[in-house]
Image 1 (cartoon, rainbow, N blue to C red):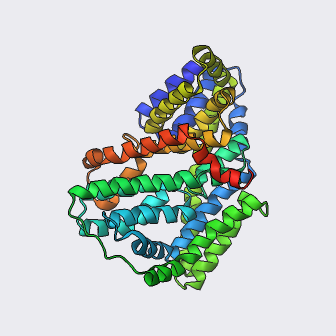
Image 2 (cartoon, helix red, strand yellow):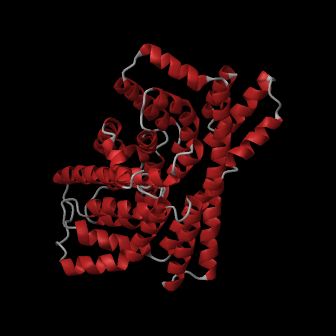
Image 3 (tube, rainbow, N blue to C red):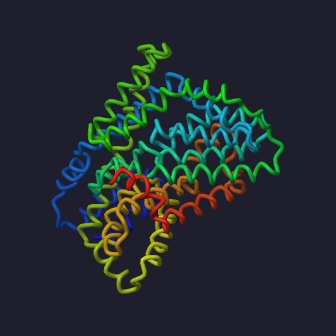
Length: 424
């Protein structure tokens, strides 16, 4: 069944069909060609893959971030970032990264971060002397923090697939997220050496304290979510519902969200959530056939005959993840690969939470690489610049992020230090 599955997948991709439809159609076609499995299994597997209580957290987190943004929280986060790092070489480039780090704590999505932060900062960066392509690349690179820093939609999906604790997965992203942000800021600092971009005066501690006070409502939400999950007060799904209630209350108190605007945000969140669920269902069918054919176990056994060195296996996995991430978006790629890679990780003794961060981050890097490069496409549209113009400025940013990937992969303590502080 693997041969027709692979051939159909390649055919549908060449025809330009969306990846969710491609994977579902390839699975259906492979089952029809094989004939040994009743076709009703398709519907059953599609439904059962989505019949998961933890997955209810996804629409909750999407809606929470959306209604918080209605309350003007992005502007407050930008003001705080400006006060903290606006004086550093690179100016608004540094502010973009710092804002993306803060915005990640309420969005959980790279695309949402790219759109929200980029929509406000990219035009301002261009006015401050940044070329359109540089502004687009910096903002897209910073948006990758969305699914790394908790709360993370990708981590919720990973947890639903593997049974790992959502709270521990959230905590494992804190230090890697800070390192990614620091490396990006250093990269922008070096890029700014050849640019004539505006640098803002250093803010005093009074201004910083005032900006922090105005941003506190946004910073409370991630502490509430992660703290409640880790302490066992509520589950990830319940945390999502609490985040929605908190976000709606904040939006109403700021008097910036009327009934019509609130309904519009709920509709947008429903559409975004439905798109994710369709991707999850189609990819789950594809992954089920791969698992049914015994590919994960066979691959793990083959690798053990090739090498018994975990470092070599990790390098091979990283290469595979980067290649797949370039061609396929993170969510379907994760659903395809996690069932295949988990037995290999277990066989070589990789910590499951460390391995989850490696897989998630490596696949996210594909969002910056052609031909998918979803994040770059979003920011290019905002910057009104041709996508191909970003190829050159993207190189130093991408290489810096790959360097962070190697550190995360081969220094597990970076991922596991925070969970261990909580005895998790």
